[in-house]
Every structure is written in structure tokens, then in C-alpha cells.
Image (cartoon, rainbow, N blue to C red):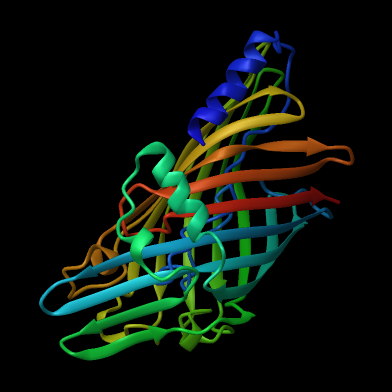
Length: 334
């Protein structure tokens, strides 16, 4: 997948795509879809842009994630095997100069899915380790965690339902656009409400509050737009229904990424998402280790100023994120 992206970039260079570009470099609107992390109010929107007064930005995001990890110690056993489809409708409205408010409404489908055979063949083709996926039952859902002989988590049936709805807001701290650059800095926050069913891992059963500082620097030249972006923040969580006695109330979150837009209709980008651990009292990486994932891909601009993000994510910190996630995000400003 990485080779394919680099090939496309090289091909554009060879064909002389050096015209001035005005493609904005923005983060992927996505976060870690591990079954034990997706239930909390992690920020999905880490961009520093703020919608102008009276305008709307509407988005529809789709994340398809395949999880497979099995681990055990003398006291603990965990299996996370299944697929999750997260669809989220988002809207942001420019309430006043430098200030926006919005809402995110997610919907989940969870089951055995269909990606196991594809991922096994992909690993075989490139000599990647299977981690036991090739010998496990195909296309099943089994999210299970036992500690000291007590079953603390079990989801083994296909389910669907609405997730935890988030109310969002943002305030622009700095926004300077010149002919050759665009620099932004914004403070963004969200309140996640317990509207999803925690027994199916559609939510945590609690209310979460996130606050983050988001920034970006984009330079424009004859070679197109070059951008850096990042965010840093914190997530405060009320008591969770999931692994309640092991759950931590605070976590740090952050993103960092870069991109290149060789023309006004296309960009390529890569992004790291990280979070500190959300659980304690476990020696399993899947439970207590800080999570890091990488997403790479790009964006396309279509007539009518529709923007389509396309990304693929993998776990850099093994076991703390899905084996692979596919992201599609369509957005437009009105």
C-alpha cells in the first residue's frame, strides 16, 4: 500500500505536475477503532480550520476496521477478533467570527466481516507475520477478556446501533493566509454523551470531555502545497461501564502529519495518531499499553468543492489498534 502511494507521487513528478496548487492539507477525520478505545470520546476532527460565520461544513465518514489479536498471561486472556464499521455524520456551523459549533452522530455495525482472507493473502504475498490469523476461524466476531478467571468482557454476536453522540466546538486563535502560505491555530473541544449501548461496545456508558490545541502550516509554491499539521490535548472520562475497575479517568491524545498537494484537485498525506493508555492493572499490551497508529493516503477535490479523503491505517504499536482500517470521508462547505 505504501509502495503504491509512493509510485503515484513519483508518476506525478515525472509527468511534470508542477503547477501552482491551492489544495489545503488537512488531517484525516478518523481515530483509533480498537474495540476497547473507540467507545471513548477521542477527537476525530483534529484540523485547525474554523467554519466562517453563517456557513456549514457537512461530512460523512466511514471507517472499516479489522481486528485480530490473541494474547495471554497466567492471569489474563484476551481475544479481539472481528470487524467494525463506523459511519458518522458530522456538521459544523460558523456561529460567530472565529467560533463554530457542531455535532457528530456515529452508527456502528459489528460482526465477523469479510476481510480475513484478503488480509491473510496480503500477509502471505509480502511475507508479513500472520500472528495466528491464518489458523483462527474466519469471519467471526469474538471480543473476549478474562482476568483471574472472571469474564470481564464478551461480545460474540453481530450487532448494530447508534454510538455515543458528540457535541463539538472550536475557536480560532490564529489564522493568517497570504499568497504563499496559510498558518492556523485553533482550540477545539467536544462533549461525548452516553447514547450508545456499552454492552455492545457502541459507547462507554459515560460522558467524556476532550480539549485539544490544533495547528497547521501550509506553504504554496510552483511545486504545489506542502503542509504540516498536528494536535495535542487531553480526554477526561467519567466512569466507564467497560472494564470499570481498570479504567483510567484521564488520557493524553495527539496527532502529527504532513502532506503534499501537487495540484488543486489532489493531495497525499500521512498521519500518526497516539493516545496514552486508558486502562491499568494489566500486563497485556492490548489493555494497558499506549496506542499508536499510522494512516496514509490522500484527498481528492471534485466539482462543487466536494472533498473525498481516502486512507489506510495500521497499528504501529502492535495490538493497540486494528490490524488494518480503511477510511473514506466526504465533506463539503455550504
